[in-house]
Image 1 (tube, helix red, strand yellow):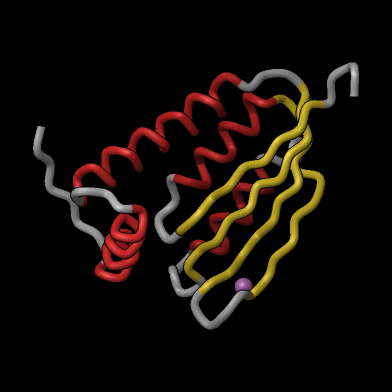
Image 2 (image 1 turned 30 degrees about the vertical axis):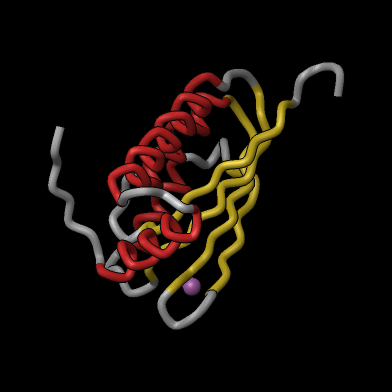
Length: 135
Ligand code: NI
């Protein structure tokens, strides 16, 4: 199937550089791989269950109106899950937030998905560790 997608020029430019370096034969092949990787990541997160500790790292657009407040509101809603958070002003454009979570993997997933879906959030990375027996 063919699809049309709108992207910021700098994002597409960087993507094209990377697929050239990696030796992809076409942009389409690079995009197919990126989508597969996105799906694998989602399925991994969906399979996780039980009590976990984790770190959510996010980078977002400092200039996006209301986004800082939205992220704070979201963290207040997930009060029981969040142990701590750290805000770093990376540069003029970008903020980084590191959120330490502890709780049920399903709740962590819900929080991560809510963050990912916000406009102006550029990158979200979740790292989790089990709290099970045997550690
Ligand atoms: Ni900041």
